[in-house]
Amino acid sequence: MSKDCIKIADDYTGYALSNFCVPRHYEEDLENVLIPWGLIQDRTERLARDIFQDIRDEPLTALCVLKGGYRFYTDLLDKLTTLNRFHASVSVQLHVDFIRLKSYENDDSTGDIRVIGGDNLSNLRGHNVLVVEDIIDTGRTMSRLLAILQKYEPKSVKVASLLVKRRPDSTGYRPDYCGFEVPDKFVVGYALDYNEYFRDLNHICVINDTGKAKYKIQQN
Ligand code: HPA
Ligand code: MG
Image (cartoon, rainbow, N blue to C red; front, side, top):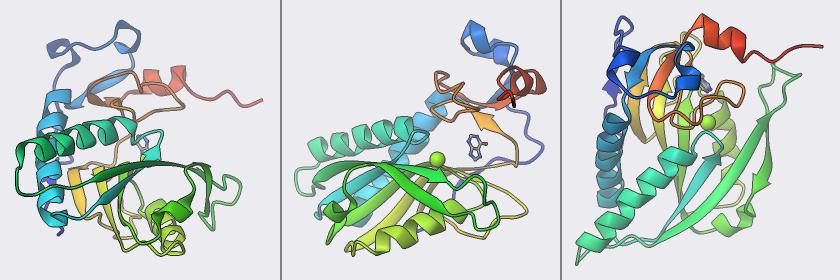
């Protein structure tokens, strides 16, 4: 069942870094704290409850899209296992699975993706699959991934994404479960990276120009 996200407005300036604990090595590289870690936890708790109520008594294969989805994935599964412990009459047996994707970088026009790692997707046949993502950007990657997954004939496929970005070039794709809809700014932290940096930051923050320049990939 699709439910509304928490919408973060375009002019929302978040919290000052000085109000929260941020690693010293990133202090100069961030504009603000957009979503504090505690709020991510509270929202994830509700998403877990929605998923639990929708799936009710059927097994679920939770498929983590690496690397950006790993923190949301572990927190979401922790909350689902807590629901399993506390509900005497309903239970959702969980299977864990991982996938890693790569875009065909030199062919932007097609936007094709490849699966480059993780479990054998044939395991998904006949299963209820929950794809767990960090962020839906244009929506193209997710649509391609869903097309790939369908080839393995799962019983059902749903998508939980912590973030959905409001982009002018969005395909209009919406996940079944969404944590927050965010402005079209580059966000990092809670496993979301900029060139592999900032995964070791708990809060979701907006990167600033200093951070972008410092961790830019040097072209030869
Ligand atoms: N941050 C990190 N990774 C991303 C983003 C973002 O804002 N958009 C798409 N991938
Ligand atoms: Mg991702």
